[in-house]
Length: 398
Image (cartoon, rainbow, N blue to C red; front, side, top):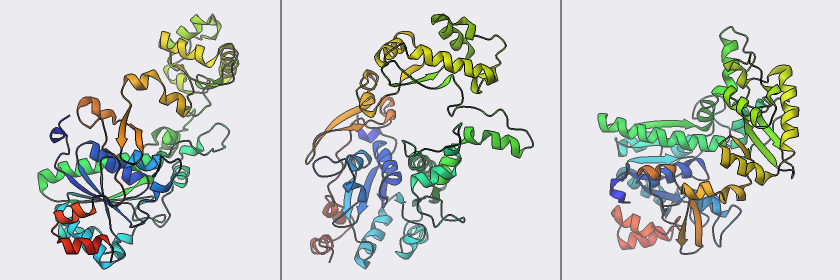
């Protein structure tokens, strides 16, 4: 793929963010063609470099969120580091940071300063709860944010469990990418930059239409019942156990599909013609008890593999619950090009997830390796006018 034809070719992004939301967002922007300069603390770098599990030197996590970037080390607590950062801001289209609200202001690197240096700059601050509001001072950890959106309070028994995915982190990342692309489009019309206060909480809360639907109805003076049930209370949208003790997920919601399934298992007694379109997303009341018992009896007759083979053959959405290893090895992932491999100078041959927009020619299919800590410092400093003597002093963090 010719990178010059990518949507964000020619856009330069200065990335102060660390851990997940910011880095994953800026990696996506790099996949869309942007040049991303990652600013890291000297010696330790992005804390995610040290997470588990690791390859030879850095973590899988770090490599999965920092491909195709350049790395410069700056001590932002020192005047020299702040001076370099300000020079970089002058040359960049976009700034992304994910520190606690107020820290960039203390460092003299907030939007107010950045916009004076570069009136066209798009400045995106990612935080847990945003720059304003009574929770703005709370650290933006995913579990805390998920717990407060209503998403974790929907289980039939009312008991919350720790989720298996960092939904708040990824919601923040996605809205960051959307916001920056929208701001770039707006700037092309107005010539003016933008200050984006992006909250992970706001981002995930905005995605919680189904959890909040009954509350919406109640707030408007309606009962809100029965609620839209997609949290385990619907026996036709739930988890069962196979013959070999593995979990099976089923989504037999639509009446036509439910009838087709019941016909194939010779249980037409489970088909009730009075079912309405709205019933498919309910608990089904007394019928639900009958459904759940019959479905568990059926799935206990078959192994995980037999059920997988049946799904591929029939197209009915009954699927084994895959472990991460199972998902990695799925033929469908290979056929859709979901994973590619790169040769890293330190780590060897390692896999990476492929941006799903690559198929449309909007993103790269193969990452450049994630950068070594500070590997591009000299090149970046030279590009903004520092002399060899100054570069030596700055890279030694004197």
